[in-house]
Image 1 (cartoon, one colour):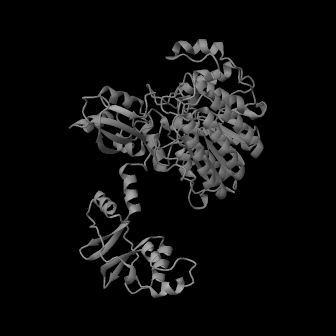
Image 2 (cartoon, rainbow over the protein chains, first blue to last red):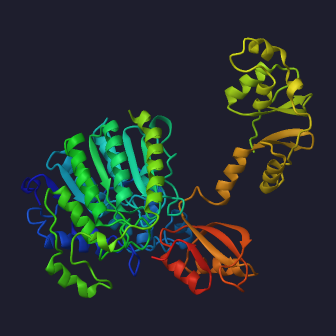
Image 3 (spheres, each protein chain N blue to C red):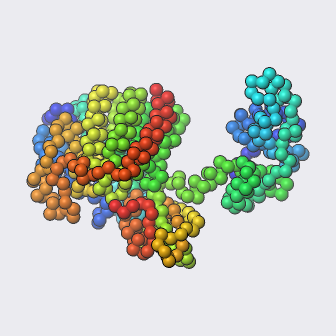
Amino acid sequence: MAAQTLSSRAAIVHDLALEDYGFGGDHPFNPLRVRLALELCDASGLLKHYPFVSSEPATEEDLTTVHSLTYVRMVQKAGRDAAALSDLLPYGLGTPDNPVFPDMHEACSRVVGGVLAACRLVMTGQVDHAMCISGGLHHALRSKVSGFCVYNDAGVAIARLKEDHPGIRVAYVDTDAHHGDGVQWMFYDDPEVLTVSMHESGRYLFPGTGEIRETGQGGGTGFSVNVPLEPYTEDESWISCFEAVVPEVLRAFGPDLILSQNGCDGHALDPLTHLSATTRLYEHVSRRMHDLVHELCGGRWVATGGGGYDIWRVVPRAWTALWAAVSHQEMPEIASEDWLSKWSAKSPVTPSPLMRDDPEDYPQKPRAARIASRNEITVQEVLDKVLPKIR
Amino acid sequence: MAREIATLSPDETAATALALCRERRIRHLPVLKGGRLVGIVSDRDLRSSTPALGDSERAAALQKVLVEDVMAREVVTADPEDPIEQAANTMRERKIGCLPVLEGDELVGIITASDVMEALVCLVGAHEPGSRMKVALPDRPGSLAGAAGVFGMCGINIVSAAMGATREPKEEGAPRERIVVFRVDTIDTTEVVGYLEEAGYSVLWPPKP
């Protein structure tokens, strides 16, 4: 659709082809998660003035800004079933985490293209904020598939922003339950890219990195910020850590654009992690990111998705809250009847009739005070390490 | 071990030795005479044998005190082919921070506490992406093989496995247990946790969803 008809100040980049990114079978990264989220946005009346903006797949030139050409070739071969497993494994392909699927190169390039298009919409001033919920594949490494992520959309998007707008300062804010390792390593020595990742401590959880002392290297020292949270952190402590770190480091850095990774796998119902958050966290983070982009960078904000593996009860509501913040709309209290009646029968669990979790269903755990105080120590250490370098 | 080694001769001054420690950011200097290891000196030996910082006699003393006056003459050394755990144990038992490595009479390297730490990090695979799992196994033949087989069946690669001391079982009459920490190359441990429990191993981390 033509850009002129974009209403108001936000855009959502999506088309059906983006839902080809998935690993099939009962793999936890199921593209249905995107469908469920967008249909809930629609059924909640939040897409009325926001038709989907389509996008082109990323080109090989785009991908090789952060990936090696040999890796891209291997992904292409894998998707055509033209490579032996022994050749694929060194690239992380063909494992239970990252099985090969037909035309995977094309599907993965489309996701990157979606985030590139979102960045362009924002940089050309057509909209203030743009969301591409298929993006957020933050584990992808230069030459390796990792943790369900083939191509690193944020990595490519930031590298392209830097090429097209020399001197631009980009802040990447990652609130997925897992460390945003791929993006961090791609810009580890770059003082023009601030990466901030808040995640469940890598002491136990994949990928195992994201410790406080990972602050960047060379001229980029201080520009990688990691806040490893204790398992069972819960909303209260999570939010106070976010408030203590994110506004502070972003203000010190002074970004021209903020790219957020909005994985929602820190929810108590998520099967892969142990942070015990609720929808309150995801609504808070979305609203506060919105405040911060207006305060700091003229509203330039690109929001992406990420992890989130309770696809029925968590992902649709968390990402509807995100879109509501991106598009300056109110999220309804009650989940749409139409959406519930269409999907409840197909769901193995019972989706919530309310858009926000009831705090009474998630009573505070007995160790909460101890966990909160450990997190406070972490936050202080992080700020002491990075703030003097960023300023 | 480090192969590029800063060394001293016995007749050099404490001032020279301390400057070398500062410049190379190291704490231990082997002392060679005619190519043979005759002693070792640490920055702490040098400091404690000279007046403190701020003392007006310090500068003169640093020029007067010689390495041979403060060095330890009985040097505990290692062989390049010693296992890392042996070197670590020697350092722990003797309460020392480094071992010069000798091949015959020739000094070929030095191993310090930081090198041992580095080896530990590599042994547990903490520098590669992966999930950390803690499993209690019955202390009897075949347990580790059985648990490892479950990962194999799920197609999950084990990056490292570190097995600790035995402990009393939770239930009376059950065999003693060993705790194993696996680092495995997967983001999703839900399935393998289920199979491990089914096979009778108790998974201490991660918790069941």
